[in-house]
Image 1 (cartoon, rainbow, N blue to C red):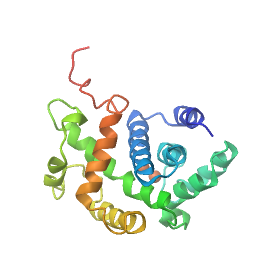
Image 2 (tube, protein in one colour; image 1 turned 180 degrees about the horizontal axis):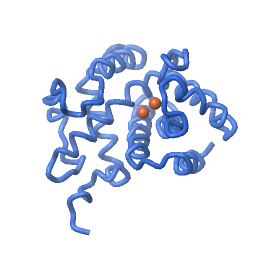
Image 3 (tube, rainbow, N blue to C red; image 1 turned 45 degrees about the horizontal axis):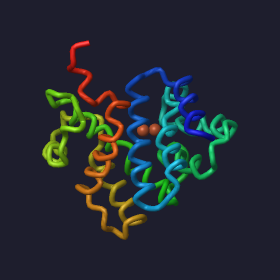
Image 4 (cartoon, helix red, strand yellow; image 1 turned 30 degrees about the horizontal axis):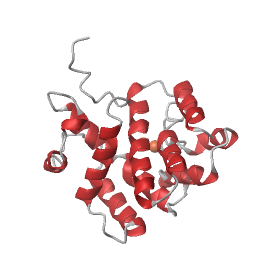
Length: 199
Ligand SMILES: [Fe+2]
Ligand SMILES: [Fe+2]
């Protein structure tokens, strides 16, 4: 399955621009970590890009992403990617994370929401102006990126750190890595200042 085919699936089934941007952000973070760990960036990227592809078809945590998996396999999605996608919602699928890719996806999923929120509160609305410390400062602020469960992000980061970094990936490092990855794709995320530039 090529990236183009994966994106075609997303374009065909995901209408919400925010959800598309979320998957692009997670894709960027996954590619970053694959490169860092000497893993296959294409398959790690696919896991990020596709993980929520069926949310608008199966918008409950019981059905998503389980009900969409047959379609993914049909489209030629590699089995390791399928497993990572299943393992991002273990409560719904019963599939626990096992590989580094699985743990990476869990660790990169929700944290992208904090980074996006940090970009959107800046006057420039440019993710390239965001610093790690601005995200850390708002970590305990409940109204900021209210949908992002901090405890879950912390747990997922610790697990990923243990499995892939011998426990050496601190939360601040993880925030910095995801931020760096998202800066690289600022235009695709529409977090490159365009939201405040006159048309
Ligand atoms: Fe999901
Ligand atoms: Fe997600």
